[in-house]
Image (cartoon, rainbow, N blue to C red; front, side, top):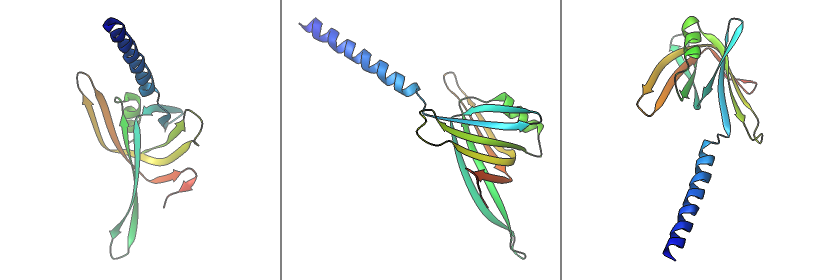
Length: 149
């Protein structure tokens, strides 16, 4: 009797493990960056993206305001084609970040930017884990058709 219970529990645990593993691999939101590098478009998969916007007074006498648009992008590994496109275009490169619901239940989000430049970059490589992080500063930003000023 103990062998039957043990076997049943083992099968149940394996079944639940397989279900859990399958759910972990299913990414509902697909995030992608695409850059316009001359006549070609360079694309890369992004694990997560964060946007921030600040207004800074850069001249207190004239009250001149500078808008700062930042993207923080997290990649599973460094995308060399994207890195090369940024390094080739020192004055900045135009691009877009899209977020798509693979189930089709949420609308696609689009973040268009101009003159994006790398502000900071890090790459972590270990024996069992890779991660890359890129921070971009941009001149303009349009979120889902709305220009951010």
